[in-house]
Image (cartoon, rainbow, N blue to C red):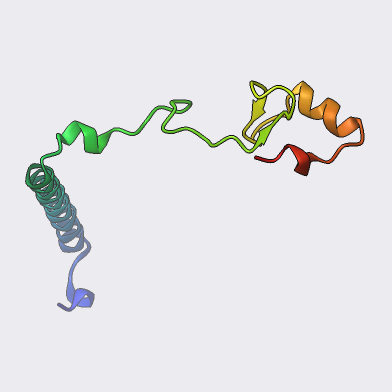
Length: 103
């Protein structure tokens, strides 16, 4: 298509036709994607809402293994994540090695 021979009015008309065609095709592509996602969900037997949601922030999705335990009191445990508990801090400040607490 040779655009150099078209008038400004014809170019604007063509531009509007292109916008409309793009909008229609985008709508069709989104609809096809929805149908594909729904078909996959049905195929594997998973409700669509379960595929579309993610666990809320702060929601526990699993447990973290204990990495440190006090040798004299097994109820005092630490995973190694976050701030050191007071008993760990006191242990290290007392000149003892953190490796001695490792499980």
